[in-house]
Image (tube, rainbow, N blue to C red; front, side, top):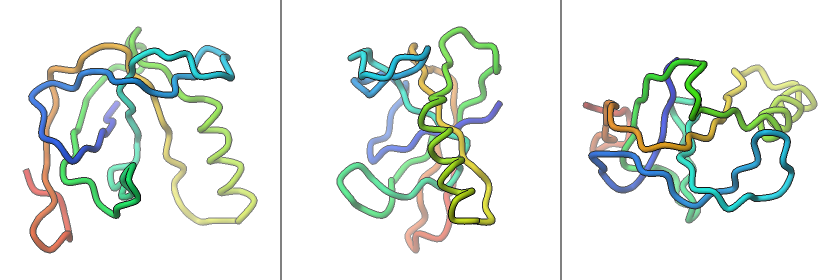
Length: 118
């Protein structure tokens, strides 16, 4: 399974940070450190309202990896939103990862913000 993480910082290792972990049926934030991953290869909106993250991390994981958890609640909300507005697009999935990630490919936006380059 290929997943993506985005950041304005270049890392040699993806280390979990504080996040809104809600997996395993919990509806409240658990306060556990996680790395957010998505199936969307072109996630554009930054946490401070900007338009582009500078770096994209491409991670290959097994679907049954014990540290990988689907954000089912958020994924259902996205799916419902796309259905209600009858959007014709792929439905991205979001995941939490509970462990550092050492193996990945990193790409950076080109100068014209047209594509990622490795």
